[in-house]
Amino acid sequence: MSQIKYPSRVRYEYSQDPDCRLQYTHGVWGGINPQGEIEVNFYVESDKLPMFSERPVEPDGRFGDEEVPFDEEERVISRHIHTRVLFSYDTALALKRWLEEKIDTLELEESSTYSPDDPGFEVQQ
Image 1 (cartoon, rainbow, N blue to C red):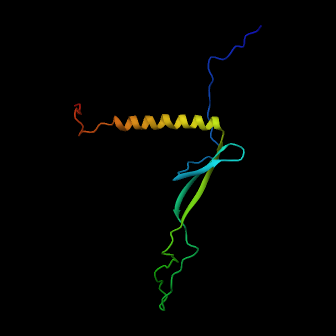
Image 2 (image 1 turned 60 degrees about the vertical axis):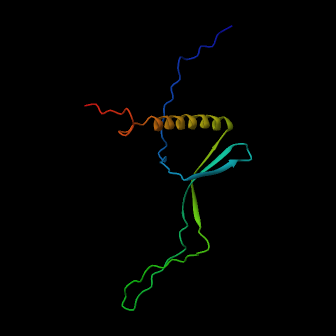
Image 3 (image 1 turned 135 degrees about the vertical axis):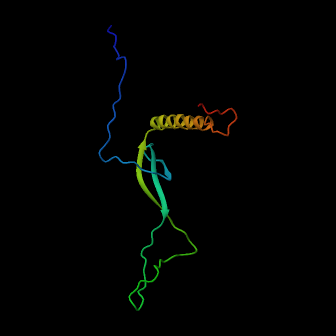
């Protein structure tokens, strides 16, 4: 019976798609799709742009103040979805663990930050 010989290590090398770009997000919306995958839609929010704006023209040709139609009873926020991601249950668990590790690291860094006002803080000269 032959034994399988496994490599001593596996290397992951990274490349980036030429269309890859950094995206900022205000939030996420999504859920489980009919195929049982998790769908995540990242979005940014802003006030909805008006359909138009106008500036009256004075009799002497000068522009007046810009006027924008505005409904005082309702504020509309636009959510622009810039990135959609689908992943499996196993990938979701891996992402959860990864995020928890990063959050734990940030919390540890925040709790161990020293300032000159902290007791025991000394400046070495």
